[in-house]
Length: 169
Image (cartoon, rainbow, N blue to C red; front, side, top):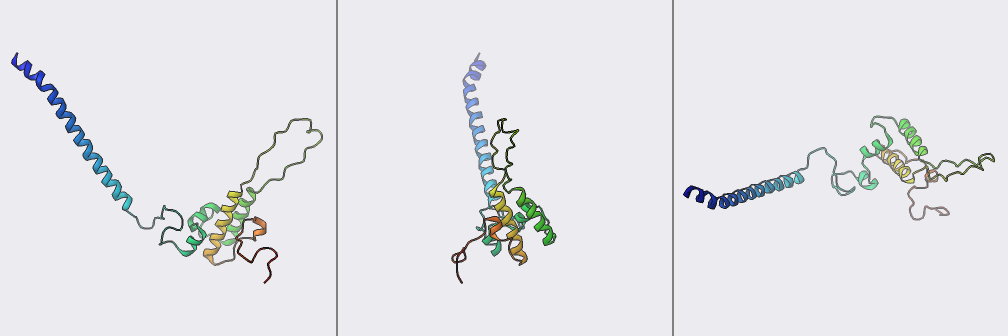
């Protein structure tokens, strides 16, 4: 009977020790995970582009800082390789730019005017056109060539003071 009483009175103590030991182990594991996370955050591998905002890294080139786009991003946007000649790059630029241009809306014919036509939403993306334009601009800046076709064909070109329409030299 004495053994039974000892087991009954020691059961809460054993449970308490198990809980404390479990909490202690969980705390140590959490601390170790936090330390590893801090080491991972501080580690900067070589030859890996910065994941921070554009222009925030001092290791980026001046062109990248000015254009807010890396050369790799520009090649990805235009779907070209670094070795591709300028003609291929311009061809891809024109194809992608035109694909995102507003499509002309066809005139309704008298036979179809009786049918209910749903208004079509825009089939173009000014945002994508801007990205494509900036990608070509970035690649040409890196190669030291003249920029993309004039702003009149895009409507998104850079405008500086005194160079707008009607400006005199």
